[in-house]
Amino acid sequence: MTTRIVVKIGSSSLTGPEGGLNREAVAFFAAEIAALRKDSCEVLLVTSGAVAAGFRGIGYASRPKLLHEKQAAAAVGQVMLMQAYQEAFAGHGIPTAQILLTRTDFCSRRAMNNAMMTVEELLRQGAVPVFNENDTVSVDELKFGDNDTLSALVANLLKASHLLVLTDMDGVYSGDPRKHPDAVRYQHIEEITPEIYAIAGGAGSSVGTGGMRSKIDAAKIATRGGVPVFVGRVTEPGDLSQAAAGTGKGTYFATTLSSLPVKKQWLGFMSTPLGSLYVDDGAVEALLHGGHSLLPVGVRRIEGSFHSGDVVEVLGPDAQLLGRGIVNYDDTQLRSIQGLPSREIVPKLGEVHRLEVIHRDEWITLR
Ligand SMILES: Nc1ncnc2c1ncn2[C@@H]1O[C@H](COP(=O)(O)OP(=O)(O)O)[C@@H](O)[C@H]1O
Ligand SMILES: N[C@@H](CCC(=O)OP(=O)(O)O)C(=O)O
Image 1: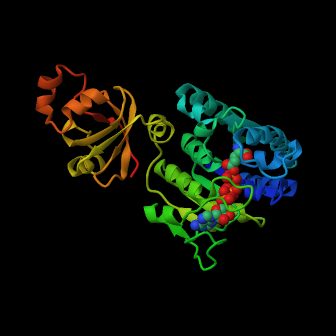
Image 2 (image 1 turned 45 degrees about the vertical axis):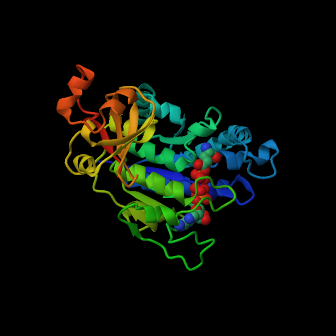
């Protein structure tokens, strides 16, 4: 069985500190990916660097901060980026293809199925699909925020064997090494806890976007979808194959979970919850360990306004996120039955199509 690998390359690895595209870096990564493919791996590439590559070409002295300026720079830089990859991979006899996505695309099952079919065909034909966010049409609140998240969504969707997130640090440290010289590197992170989030800071270089926090977010999404993750540096020939083999210069996030059906991926990582349900300890046990549905008796507090069929998030008594699900009541109905045993629901509301607040089949654990 072919090993399918998603490689994400951050801006910090593709551009200089003053911006502009480092074409030698593009050629280096193309050679690394070509070597992986010789080891009978399929490789999908998620690349940043469009904004960083393009901003000087459109007259900005430094990487823009305003959304429309970033979008203009990306529109210029994306052409430069793809041209550089096309030339670099052509030297290895590998065709490249451009896939531009936005978060809105991921919310559409139809768009995702179309994208998946295109990507599977490209892989069958021996091409390297090169993904980036479609910065021209993304808007601030909908942007992935960074390509780390995009790479995790792609890895889950295409059921990758590994996600390799390449950056300018050789892994996740106990603090940003730029600010904490005594920080120590984690070789492996078994569980992504609030303490791990606490050590992950923002972007390091002048061209980065997501920082280590977004890489932790991406690792959480990918491992939840059954994809192990590497975050680290690839600077010498052979480093990428080492990263894929588990001996890379970085941090590994393992997972024992299986890949998720597209519906659960959408529910967990692409949907927008319209409400929050706070539940009691009994409901926490039922949802996290019992494999049960959420019943009205376990609901303690409701926030937001929503209709039956919308997505809501569910939180425990400690306000920690437990997961997301499709709710079977609107918020008004649910407020009138919260805390009631199931036998009292029909007398209270009349006939309902489902007693469960969230049915197990329409639930995803995110804890
Ligand atoms: N705990 C941490 N461990 C390692 N790097 C960290 C940590 N917290 C913040 N960082 C910063 O995250 C940066 C990598 O993210 P970013 O700047 O977005 O790079 P990229 O362009 O590769 O995505 C590092 O250069 C580093 O300065
Ligand atoms: N679409 C943007 C992505 C920016 C981004 O995510 O940057 P990074 O944090 O360096 O991966 C670009 O190509 O510049």
